[in-house]
Length: 176
Image (cartoon, rainbow, N blue to C red; front, top):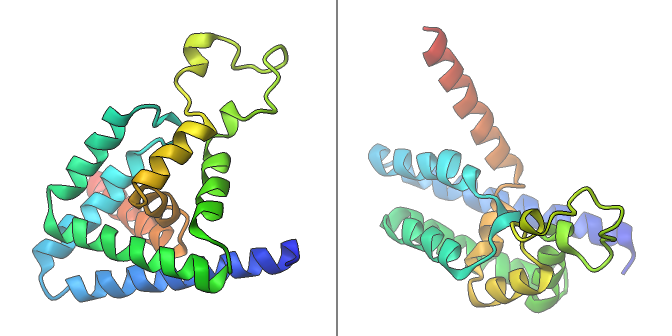
């Protein structure tokens, strides 16, 4: 499969998952309070995650506790994780492990095997320890597939539109 074909397939995957997210958000409009809780999660809690610094199980456990604290958020993330898992095999014709390995390697770019410490601006060990390694992130993602979903959600056009609307509303409230 050519790189161009893979890029198109990945764009299709993002589009389909984005449609799924939009559809689920639209269904939640039936109960405005639930819709607001989910949108708040997406625009604040999810937006604040620094995937590059998920270096230990405690940080991941805290994310999971936050997701589990609301059934609507939990259902959304679990449903999207199942959809993503299916689409990776169907659209990209890749196995899940390959997909998450590529995702983990992308996220952990600051700690990849090609970083030359003598020319890197991240030379301080204390600073480097703040960033997750590809191997550690891969372990976390294999055991917590919802992490992949959270990362992908933030790359969806529907999510970016949601953030644009949220920012516009916050700006209007601050001005008014």
